[in-house]
Length: 384
Image (cartoon, rainbow, N blue to C red; front, side):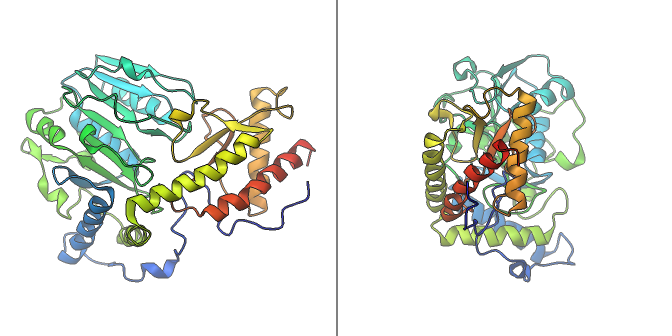
């Protein structure tokens, strides 16, 4: 194939950290409060503003508390598990790499005796009917490494006895979440917001706070995860205070993203952009002779990211190592041409490609990417 003439204007399709908002530049951080004590009124006001804008944009009920946690989404998930799990048996949905990691933590680190891991292969979904609402549940809403997601929150009953701990990092700002079904939900600024890494958000509902008041974990809780004081949630952590000092450059960057999201129509605007991006890529995959969705069931494909496997005559005879090598070559060619950065499949997932389609990505850039995908595939097949 002839090399395409037009490149994506912003070839940032990584699934984390994800593309910044289209208007982003470093000059937008000039108003950051730096060199200030993290307990100062000015510092705390910035943190409180982030939480307030997140609450408004994601339509988080006032009954839920918003905490800023160190360690990105990983830190927020582990903070929730270390503080909340233990008094009941635990079910874990492990249909992607991070679901498997949370299962490992529950089994090996917290050493909870009564654990059921509902596993599924990449591209498939755990048996949601096997979840017992009398037990606590840990699950990713979207498996970013597998390109799969739970289809909705209908499998979680309103009268459940156990808590739900949801890793929602790729779902926020891409879908409307049922907050009444999520007792503890987490995400990171580096995903759909297009913010910087190392800062996580933990959203705690009333039932999770009741657990904090009624239960003291038998294991040591690291200081970075200590959100309870005298048997209840430390409410100062929801008013601009933090367990550990965050970067105010990153906080300012988060505010840049949140203000932009407000300007494009808030959550509805972000959902519409993600759907438009997915639709363009879906149509291309439907017609492709060499790429297919890793998730064969469209009901479990998330708004973002799109995970693709290799198919067709070009790759049929290749073993997994050969397919992984071919996918890596395609991704490397596209990076060298500045047509797409960081789109090879997650290292533990089946060989293929993965494209972030969240709201900070422009649909025009997804459209411009498509002929480059075909060109790179053809170049690799020809032995380039």
